[in-house]
Length: 195
Image (cartoon, rainbow, N blue to C red; front, side, top):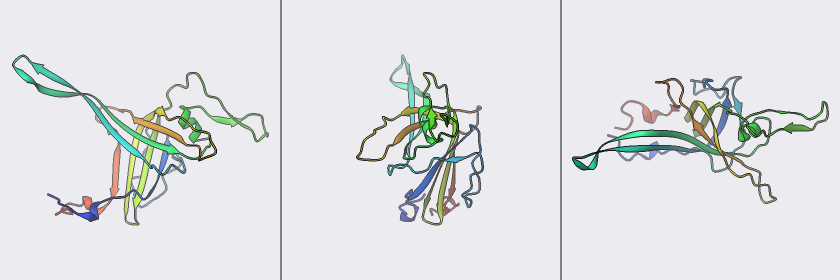
């Protein structure tokens, strides 16, 4: 059983967040920085980085014979990723507002338009998160299917950058498929590394 080992403490020193069409696979090779043509890098994010959340709701099965539950079952499980985008462009704005496209208002005008619809529909995406801790440690998390379920308030003021804060919720694929996949280039996971 592994004990205290400071060489296994990880700091997400720098990273990036990418989006693609639902079901798009992330690269399995952690030595490459190229995610492929289907992936779009969302650019700079706030210093808060990325917050992963894993919540579940349970229900107790009570019995006549006991004051304590005889069994507990999960009725709901949720995996979320929360982050704030700092760049405003044709990828980040529709991602924040739930779909649609940015287009030129009038041809050759250099004026662009984005319409926020009453019912934007469901803008499902694949999400990739990658971070490094030094030159030798790299982590990559891919959520093949999900959507933005919460948009933070957007502050427009002279004291700081505009932040497009979102919570992205993973959605189930086919039964038995992974909700998310973590890839680690990290010798801490090698057999016997913690002994």
